[in-house]
Image 1 (cartoon, rainbow, N blue to C red):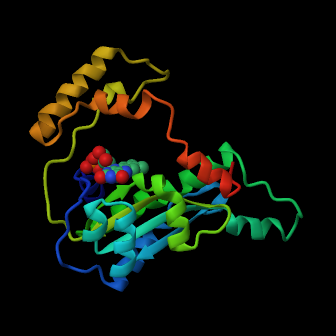
Image 2 (cartoon, rainbow, N blue to C red; image 1 turned 90 degrees about the vertical axis):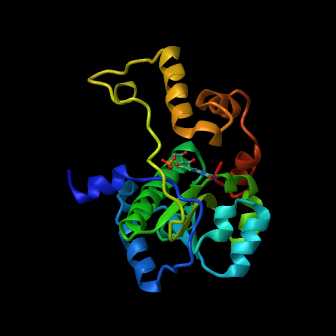
Length: 237
Ligand SMILES: Cc1cc2nc3c(=O)[nH]c(=O)nc-3n(C[C@H](O)[C@H](O)[C@H](O)COP(=O)(O)O)c2cc1C
């Protein structure tokens, strides 16, 4: 249809990278484009920590052994950030209440929109990447590694670099199971089973569990308290 839409529809997460470096100039352009995402009241409640040094990537990998972290040319750590907001608030008010679910949504959504823009900008220059969210499991270690102060929490990172893999894009749920006209339409279990098959056909032997088994892994038990504990410690809950 057009170049932008074609690019978006070609997206795949890339976890293996070649040798080519993203130049400082390209990275700056990628991040400036990423930062043009909309944000709640233009508060831009996030920060991005650029990790290029081998020592920091290694330290990160030691905490979280995902090969894409080590192989990436650049790792971008997206943190939800209400610390800056506190400084603004204190110009006008002695009280500051960053804690709560709504504020977490504000900062997480702002960061997510900027991150998606960033990844897309990188893809438009021929680079690839993967968002890495499991790092929330080691949030406290990350806070130490990156000097994260109160009111700042890691949301995810993006490992970026020259793609060293290609495959067809992963099929999404069928359009009509996600996009509804005028009112919500609850879906049947058949829809889930159908998508399990679509995913199986796509992934073949590369993936040993079905899509719904992965849903069960994630949602059949109470969440790991590590994120809540971290957010409480950083005065966000
Ligand atoms: C918030 C978020 C966190 C993610 N965390 C990880 C991760 O920790 N490790 C990983 O390999 N992929 C991670 N991914 C990538 C997803 O697995 C991937 O986007 C999804 O399977 C769809 O595949 P595609 O991006 O190739 O279309 C994450 C994606 C998102 C949006």
